[in-house]
Image 1: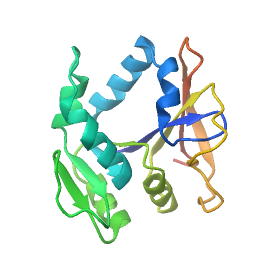
Image 2 (image 1 turned 60 degrees about the vertical axis):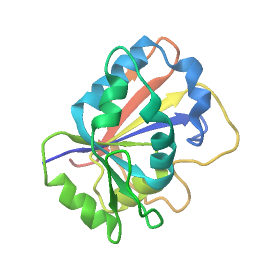
Image 3 (image 1 turned 90 degrees about the vertical axis):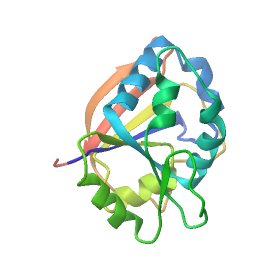
Image 4 (image 1 turned 120 degrees about the vertical axis):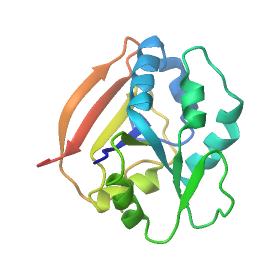
Length: 180
């Protein structure tokens, strides 16, 4: 059974929107961590907004270590109610997204990796479908912007399962649902 891993960039005050603020904290250590999680996955699971941003940017990217090739080649499952023409190796999940994602979990062995996609992450947490939450916390306060967790987010208790700190001061805190 696949594991669903949500990987989300955050500021200290919880902002996830437009993470251009993360660039000064991304170094070779963070790149190696990001590469490891991408190559552990066999598909991406994205919300519509993240998918549209990625689909506009990634197809033209290249790099030396194969990250861009992997991003571009792997299947993408996209939760959307508004898009109707899949591109960039995408399959759209419409209707009952939690049921569709639960079915995807039963297929394959590699992780389903979620980048960003706060609404999708919250929906899947509500349905207890997230197996690991990786919060990339950056030592910056943005002040305003979309936050991952809001007053409407489902209440959940999580257990820490690991922390990776980079020399830039950014760190990835990994959590699993309590009791798993």
